[in-house]
Length: 119
Image (tube, rainbow, N blue to C red; front, side):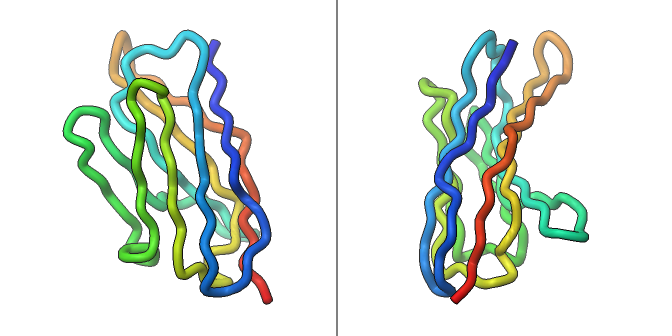
């Protein structure tokens, strides 16, 4: 069984910063990539950023490019999302996702953490 636990969400004023953390524990096979998604009310879940295990290549949504930074600690099966210059439109529930290819394609999701950007 795999547990994926996020932390670090909260309420912040526009222009502020937050750092999200996500740790995977349990029987975790080789992780190929870790990432963050978000879902705002009435909208579909969308990719925010992800990072691979091997070469640490990253991928960002256009809307967060230059403001958010994803990083990971492979030894701890942990991924972070540093969010700077937050805007009201960043308000959403943020979900952590981990996925792998061995022994078959698999993925797990966290329970989500609320990020609210408001004055």
